[in-house]
Image (tube, rainbow, N blue to C red; front, top):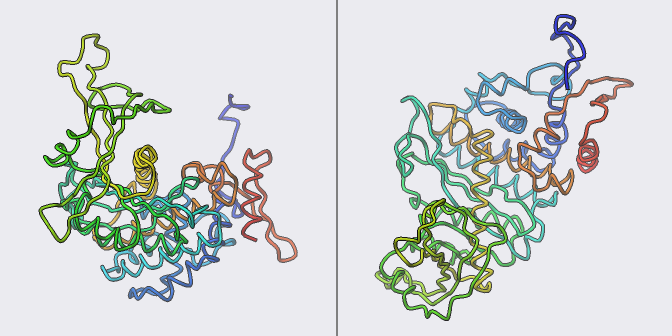
Length: 448
């Protein structure tokens, strides 16, 4: 591919008032209206700033189109956007709006996000078969920040200065995860702080989305606490949590007979940081274990599903391992799945890392304000934008139903169009030969 003309022979002018760069926002905002974003935001929010629902939709629309900072929201003010949408606000206005949030207003916004997700699940094939089986994943991440003006920043378990975000997702074996709950915390907080109430909130939203069948809540060892397990059980769900390798867990593993181990082979090799190479073989066994035995009122007896992998020499070396033995990974669970299903299913918890990566590659690339509550509101709005993008993908095609949000944004959202009007009717003229014309037409047809 090369230029058909010399650059000096071409002229450029930013002078067409009928062009838009993100025509895909038309069906997305129509979907948001159908699922109650404007109505719920208008009734649930008591923030002391007028036209809250319009400004909420403006921030979400900017995020869907790729904005990752307050200044980036200016991408909505160009060409013919004012002919397609009303209530477009300047970034400075939206920034002032976010800074007017308090902690209570953020919790009200959480209610808006949950209601929109519930309605999306009703109006789109967002969570297929959620009434039969669903996964709920909870994890936290530290978003690095820079400078000293942001409220709440601190050094957490990553030893990086930033803010800590709790993320809770819902998915099914055939549907991509959507964000059911978020919570921004101080950067220095521990992962388990407030996790029990957050898990309960996430499970409540999952049930509102139609998760009436088996629900398995998956978490890593940072959430291996009696309070978290109790919260899952009270919600009527099952838990699958990585067990910490303390003395009692190691003793339980040591009691497993040698002939109880079942060999497995991963369909795809798994990278092992400790071994410094790819692992394709392992063995799995299970035993019964009583956790939190030091607290008689909170102790829980359930299954301990253990995977072991042989200790290997460093990658690229032919010498045998200096120490013979195994490395163990234990999962504490009360799920009714078979041993191998439970072990494989728990490894699927890594899917939440992809959701976190998508957020950080999109609207969560920055926490743009110096005020903690404004950043907490930004996180919640990022979750709404993620879910709207995911829902639009499910309406477009089977491929886009599980594609990354960045792919959906490139192929279906940020699509240039020229606006023409005739007989009081607007027509969007889109590029001829667009590779994803049929998914885009399917999305429009599903909304109209």
